[in-house]
Structures are given as structure tokens and as C-alpha cells.
Length: 548
Image 1: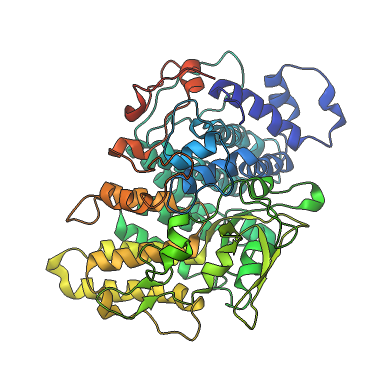
Image 2: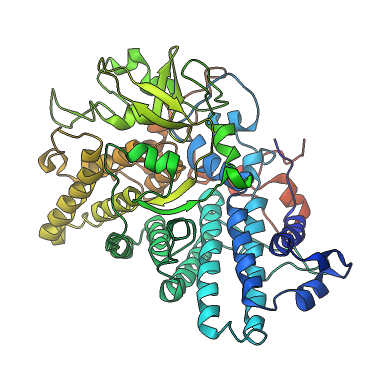
């Protein structure tokens, strides 16, 4: 595993990397000058300098350390994953729920590196207005909107993973700066994010003119997707629903046809339903190595390269599914019926993973296409020549965000008619994603899910079916726990019930959490040592913080 990097070192090194990325064509770069003098005198002179720095922000988001944490924080503690082959290390411990301040998952440096890129641009870009006549105030607003959104995405991951984190707006430029920064509360961070994204809504570009740019850079639609997610996390369901509507109103974004949805979304990339995804180009030596490291790459259907990850054994093993989906979100009994099942022939089951040799291997992202056979046995074609983009937001995610918000808005008995309308709209949104993967089957009928708890369960299952291995599931479960769902028990019970189905085959350790504070990751021991102003997250205060 990678070593931890202190926040201070991340900032200074990150700034140097950003400038190198922006000035690779400048032969004058090798002239030795103080770093601050380079920034003020040789850089930030014209619009192209600003644009190059923005490009560096996106490169930073695509760094393996960033994407690996998106997977580790968003999937590994959930009921979607366990080890594919026996291995030891930090990832195994995360999947077991055995997490300490010296685990790699506790490192946040790669995200603060990108945040510092953004802060540097926000600090210096206004000067370019006075130096380049072609860079005007309107251009500056556009830049600020895009960069604030990139920074907001980073902070949103940090808040969901750690809850309280340092909010930093000033760039780290010299060693003379003070880096002892305390944590800010989650509520303070969320207010900043909503403010920044509301600003971005007004000034962000709506169309860059190319498919890759429209999906690989933030646009007004992707700003709205991120803002809706922030509202959902903070339980502002009305604003979440309304912001989702802004995304759904974009006629350019539409569900892929079921016959080509898998290769278009997870192999070719930049599909019609893509909202924002991190771009990779193997021809430019920009490969998504994280997918190969985490999900594997197979040269054929008989050899496997997966290091970790297949759907949990209890959920999908033959003996367990013989009970007709007692846990699996596929082939799941419809509430109140004896012989009706959700997703009995759902293609997402086969598209997401492959059964081979008695084990399940992740196919989503690792695969290129699945060829259905006449006998019902599929041929799996794996991606060997390129690496896929990493999808951060796509249309089904936003549809199901809105469905979740509508269900939560349906809990007030004083507004019964509105509540029924919200519930029916929620199941119609679920059916849009569900029916794409269950072509020719019956739709999900409202009468079977006509209570808030049953509808909330349905939306949660549909999100699991649709977004398997996309870095969403643990955050979905944490949202459930935070709002205390269902009302008859508590959110932790619901979360623990889900993850109790997975226990490490080697250690039999439960992945459940005993208290709310355990939903989050500890702060890295190295960060605590480097920044005395930081305090460890409460659940881990008695955990050893010694480094390895």
C-alpha cells in the first residue's frame, strides 16, 4: 500500500505538479527561480495558462489514488464486495470492517491535492483578467464556476468518508505558510458546497461542443447532479427533488438502449446517459489502472486477474439463491406475494458479474461486452486493449436520487394526497431503470409497495441493482443509517442487516458498525502527527495511531 503523505507535503508537491502539467511545452521552465516567483512572473499571464491549470485539476481527479479511494470509501465496506482471491492488506481490512488510522483508506491527501489545485486557480485567475485582454470577467466567472465544482466534488467525498474535515480555501504556495488547520463540522462544509454549487449553476458552461468535453468536464447538468446529491445527503429532500428535475430536463441526456447499454456505458464511455465521467486515453498513456488493480482484467473467460472483488458469496451463491433471493437484490420476493419476484431475469445480474468456478467475478468495468447464448449461458468478452472511463454520475443515478427524495417527502400524514402522488412518481422512476433491464417483463406495481418503508426498500434495492460496483453503495447505506430508517427500528440496524451477509472467509469478521461514529473512516495517523490541530474522529480516539 502507498505511504501516507502529510497535508503540507501534498499541497506543495501538488502545486509543483500542476505547474509542470501546465508548462510542459515551455523550455524556460528549467530556469531556477523561487517557486512563488515562478507563479507570479512566469505563469498566470494568459487564458491558456488558466485552462491548462484546469486540465491539471481533472488529471488530478483521475489519479489512481483518487479513484481507488472512491472505490474503497464507496464500495468496500458495503454488501457488494468481498475478496475475490485470498489476500491480506489494508483493502481486506476495510472489507472486514477492521479499520484503523494506519490503514491506507484513512489517507485523504490525494483529494486535498486536487483541492489545492483548485484553490491555486481561484487565487491567481483574477490576475489574468488584467494581463490578458481576451480573458474577461465573464471568462473568470466561468473558470470559477468550473473550479468550485471540482473542489466541491472532492469535499463531498471527504465529508461522506470522514464527516468533519478541514475546510481550506487558500492555496498552499510556500513552506512559510502555517498548516495546522483544525476540522470544520460537516454542516459548515455542506453550506460551503451548496453556496459554491449555486454560484456554479449560474456561470458554468452548458455545452463545450464535443462529447468528451461535455461528459469529461463539469457542465450545468453535472453541477446540478452533484448539488442534488449534496441535498440528498443533507436530507433536504425538496431541494434534491427540484434539482434532480433540472438534470432530467436536459434533453441531451437519455437512457441508453438496453441492447447496447453495457458496452456503451462501461466500455466505450461517454454514453447518452453519462453526466460526468473521468476520461482516460490509453493512446496518450492515460490508463485507468485502478480498474485493472481492483476489478481485474481478463484475457479470456478461463483466466482471471481480479485482485479483489466479486459480489458477496452469501448473496449470490447457488445454495443461497435457491431460497429465491432471500438477500440478493435480484430475484427478490415482491412484498406480500408468494410467487412474484423482482428481477428474476434482470440482465444487470449477468452484466455486473460472472460466475466461474463457483465464484463470482466483477465484470462491470472489467468487461467489454456480454454475448447471450441460446442456452442461457453467456460468453464474456473482457477488456484487454484499453481501460474504461470512471463514471461519477449518470442518468439512472439521478432518477433514483429523485425517487429516494420523493419517498422521504411522503412521510407526513397531513398531506396524504400529495404523499400518494410522490410515491407513485417514485415507483415510475424506479420502473424506468428497472424495465430497461427487464425487457418484456411486468412492471413493478405500486400496490405492493404502498408504504413509505416498502417503497424506500425498493428504491434502495434498485440503486443496488443499477449501480453495483460504481462507488455508491456504502454511501447509500450510510444515508439510510443517518436518517434512522425505518422508523420502527434505527438506521444502523438496517445497515448492519445488509452487511451482516458478508463476512471474510478467512477471518469471519462482521462488517457491521456498533455506533453512528463508526460509519466514517479514521483520520490518518500521519495526518494527526503532521497537523496537531486535528482531532481523531470519535470512534477511533482510543485506537492506536502508531505508524507502520
